[in-house]
Image (cartoon, rainbow, N blue to C red):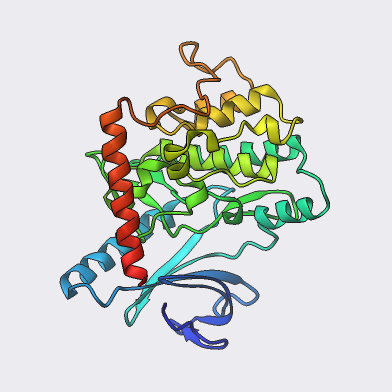
Amino acid sequence: MPIPLKPDEVLKDRYIIRQIIGRGGMGSIYLADDNRLVGRQCAIKEVQQDQSVPTELREQGREQFYREASVLARLDHPTLPKVSDFFSEGDRDYLVMDFIAGDDLKTVMDQARKEGRTLPVEEVLSWAKQLADALEYLHSQDPPVIHRDIKPSNLKLTPQNMVKLVDFGLVKQMAPDELTITVIQGRGTALYTPLEQYGGDEGHTDVRSDIYAFAATLYHLLTNTAPPEAKQRFLTPQAFIDPRDLNPQIPDTIADALMWGMNLHPDDRPQDIAKFRAALMGSALVDSKSSTRPLEPSFPYFRNEVDRLLAGAAIFLALLAIFATLT
């Protein structure tokens, strides 16, 4: 893990580090003051280049960072923090964006759980509408931008009850051949990560991957219960619990939409955010050929037993490789 910057260190002769507000395996996120705009605070995401890879690959990674950071800097939506700058110092790359004050939704949810209650369905639904707007905007870019790490802790709630989708650490921009390229390598957070994303940066992800994470996030917020990981559901289908069994206050339309969005196979999820939002709202805009209740807890990700055995072996080998790197 990179050694973090210290308070009062200055980046680019402009950004004065105040404190760490987040840490990860490739760097930290800092709260900083912008000394060119007095009173403005910003969040700076740091990424350290992997020194174990060849120089040529590090250079390619940095070029990719600049190329896709420039895409993020062009985004402009009220539910997204504005990316205002990006640069490198030494072996570290930095992405500068608006600092969003307020608690994240995981903190809000945890507080409700401590008080022995669940979050009001209507309130969660209002946040879902805002997030759907942001994702629809991202996915409508040319080429589409995929977030890949939607989760309660990446959703900040402002004092005006506005939701902001933060942390562009795993953003991908879809290439014309439908493969994807990554801004910053990573696999997302396991509880909200669809099976197709377990391939990391070699796997195929598209807008339906964000829909899975979106639905899993809402599942958690509405039930106070973390959804089972996709790989656990693949190996043990009965691990999935109908959200109504955890919170009877959830209306059927919303529960059905969550289960649709959390289908293990991408083809069996809503194919775009508009369809998922329509299902959440109980709208007639949902394709009449699609059921809003297609998921049963035993629904398989793969179509036949051979596929299931091969995929199970692949997951086992991937987990074995991850374990080897940690020992």
